[in-house]
Length: 169
Length: 74
Image (tube, rainbow over all chains, first blue to last red; front, top):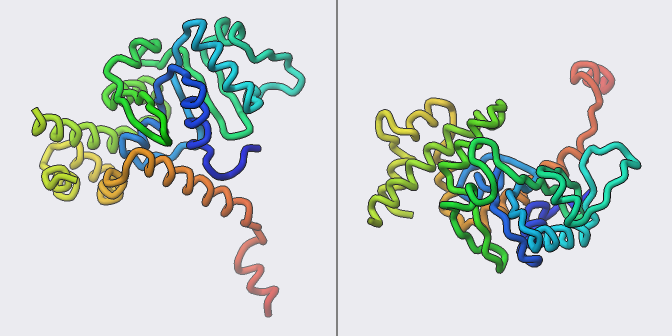
């Protein structure tokens, strides 16, 4: 079990340190946009070019990532080739849970998610965060109760961001 | 935080997303407070909350119905 503190910050620092090309999505993206939605894992949509898969595999190996809820003894080699053969992975690591998404439902692949994303500086690294409009689309597409419950607040934040942009331009 | 944004959350215009969120039961004063933080502070606050909940869960010990335990004390 990972330590109780920094279970979101530590995985973010890891991805920053290994220069993994990814976009923060899901509940952590909602938090960064200002939502009070609670989450306890980090979801990222990652670039699937070979160099990035190698960096990602090295980052995950360094924190002993293993598949979450997989049967004990299930053979699993964590390397770039395994990441290339799969698409979405849910990992438990020594520092917190990390979910890797090759595609985000309702939005698309890394390029689609990256387009229009917001650059944010945190913990000494620069991260891409999914645009709030696309985050709302993804939550709507996921369609689970917990996703739909998040929509009213996210839509209010989106509208407030619109006011902000209107005044800027 | 700009006054017009604050006002949007504190006095949601009729028909706005903020008005719908309030109607839905969201306390937008808490959202506004969260928006005053930097993204890094928001993550730290989330981490601190997760830690707090985990500690609470670890410390909780269910004893039984309160009326039953009350009787034990007498």
